[in-house]
Length: 127
Image (cartoon, rainbow, N blue to C red):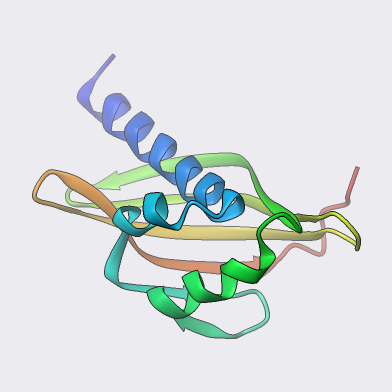
């Protein structure tokens, strides 16, 4: 395995942890994965800071899961980009099918998410 593959695998594992911890309500585990200047641009057009996004997740714990598929990583020195599909799977309403791009910065040997943009995926269907 090459260094690039190892870094890409590390980034993909980190990316999966963000959605797992957000879904599980593990906010202490989520915090170190996001840079202090993290920005989330939602599929609705709303834009939130790190703290605003984390606060918005709290009342959703147990009501839905963030399910990522098809994620792939690109590395550009100390910047990493992960893109894929992210579905919001609700317990009691229709699922939201989206695509996302999450940008990471490598600082002091650790990758941290600095930005996420999510957009609706009207061409996808719920199975």
